Length: 583
Ligand code: ASP
Image (cartoon, rainbow, N blue to C red; front, side, top):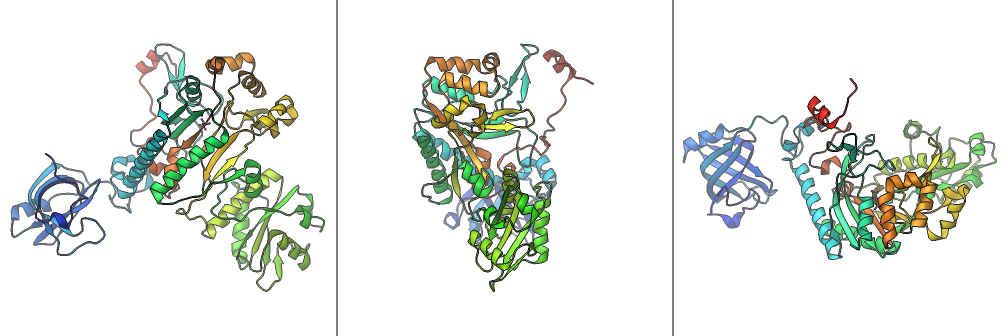
């Protein structure tokens, strides 16, 4: 038997027991007469004591051990003289009688401490050492706990976890596929699933009624910060449900996670239409940990001779409570912020509502004190507040103002990662126009059903942009953690949708024929949703980066720096696959 106990479980009640522990040498302290070693495993740290007087040979041996050596020790649990209240094993130590080195270790390239001296790249290259550190280890434990809660909850609601294939048919609609060449079918390729969307719908046709899967998905997209080419979804689908059933089911799941992981209870999640979310927050995933809703002020600012406002289709702003004292420098910083290419505004107008009731603005030339008072009233501003305004083309301006709102939220400390503001965004547009390719795309995916009352608009191409979908996202703290829709289960409507998206009968059939065929054999009404599991974990962990919650993530260029993938493959492999590489 390698061990009787772990390094995290012995305490004062075990004093006197003979135990055997295994673990890694975290740290050793040589005090001359005594040597102490912190022995670490996944469960914790236990102090080992070696006494020069009682066993000089053993003590000498202990002194020679290096960091991260793998040890097995046998000894007696004794009460410590200087206790450490910070760790559960802090009242005891092991008086070691036998020490075995199970393996040596090179000196690790960075310190295995909560605060490591290793930079990102180094820690990724030696991820197995990084995982020995508490913060990373604890994230993986959190992920496991979340996965268990999800499985148990959904299973208790009659969902079955069913695996779907990883080698599937490539469908260009959506993001770019990762493809896998088929040796047995030269010149032909599988794709790795971007999501099990079509399979889960087939499982509904197959009568499985409630399906879920914690499943890996792959998207070959240009990597934006903190996107992973492979990521995990909690993928779900249900039959014989309306939108309300779906929202309630998965709101239930989210509440269950909040309760079990955080001890937090929530009432009914707020719901906001996509349209309102854009109008009030300039985003389809508003961060509702704080207010600062947009106020549109065209009616009060136009006609005062300020050309920029007079000519803009939309003038819109936010009111930052208590910020009227902002200095020139702070205001300049904000102007610089909105003018950065990532935000793209031309400039920013500020109006200070001073504590004494007077106003000071960057447009005093055009607006008198009474005009600014009218503006302040429109905002519901109070003395001491600061109003920030942008203007321009409506959608662009709203998105720019969204960036400014979030920036102000951060500056004012209103985006506490330990505070949670979940909500549903509903009634997404069905279709999204793409200027580049001059066609409409499905905003969610081509199987998403329009709202029944908007269905007739499918017959009028001029109104396609107005059609609303039975689609919904769940958003927490400004992050879309999940999304889904009611699916089209009627073949006629699905055909119409394909036509709207520019498919011919043939091209639609070539891509989605198997699903369309299946729908002729009694497809039930169905709907579903998928959560981004990595993202959900990072939110529950109160950390921005999803990488911290993936055991072996890729870096920003999609590389696994530890194993060195992707990498070239041997000429023979290429030949076998009948793939020619241009040199
Ligand atoms: N398959 C969708 C996605 O990956 C989610 C869904 O509609 O269920 O976003």
